[in-house]
Length: 450
Image (cartoon, rainbow, N blue to C red):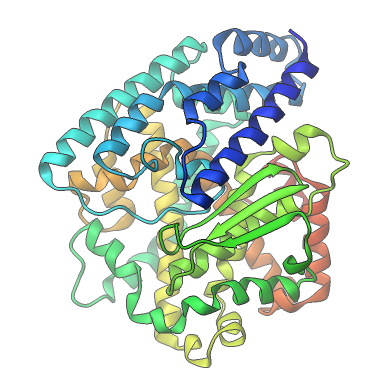
């Protein structure tokens, strides 16, 4: 097997995949099916993965073969679990759009929470999720790993014990502030669904008008020295076909051809989502085209979560809201609410790590894990809020923790208006252009401690 040929096939797949995904979501039309996209690539098979794993084992210090193994193995698993995802979509359109293309395959920092399922539907979904989990375990066993967590640890070079300790430390560090904020809510919230509804913050929607979503992102980046209206490699579509509030990106070629689709909506979540997507897009949009293929395409997914968290955290800054929105958006009661949202997102990410590790160990203590982390009752129906996120749980938490620390460092270094500081903008542009490959590089370069 020729590595250069394999790289070319992988790049051809990515370009075709994101082009078809963009066409489907942008124009709301059918193109080739997702199965056809996988089959046309011809690389998502056990033979390719066996060859790559042998290449890694023969030279454990070689980073590129390991990254390629992780990429192909991840999509191999996605391909083989398609029947379960499509069955879920037929019952409960959480993972895909009409069983053809999945919105979670596009770049996006978050997906809106689904509605609460009724008991009969919940029973169906639980059964499908369980079959999917068993299918996942069988696939990673075929690849030579004991469980999904072991696959992730080996392919990403992650210490699972350290990751678990980091998640537990995050819960401990945020416990006092989070539970104090939760106790201040009157009347008290009883379960996870009520908490999700409360955290939408619809009472504050007028502070975050839909008409300001695009100008808000453009203005924030412009003062960092990034004029996205003059980026020939970026196409921005305001699409009414998308569910309101969704923001998706399609990196067909990096950095030469990137598409973004958004559907503006009022509210805090929509602003966070679009800012987060900007962070994920910038690291591709500004990446040096002379970098090798691996550094342009196969960098650590946790970096996406880190850059998304960095820009999402702007919403927490009263200076930013007062500057970019209206002075009433700097109100103290709104500040307390947004800080609770931030704590909730970080604790939720930590809880999902602990749950994913728990399931990989053959247990299913999700109710206890999420109840302890989030401070509200977590009945069986709430499992649908987390199961679809398990595929990214480790990367999301690792990145969010680093991104939150980076945001704090920028405030300490450049002040609360770092988003208007030319020196900060230059430093961030250099960070994106240089194309870091691993989250560890970001942590080291920025003197973070995660």
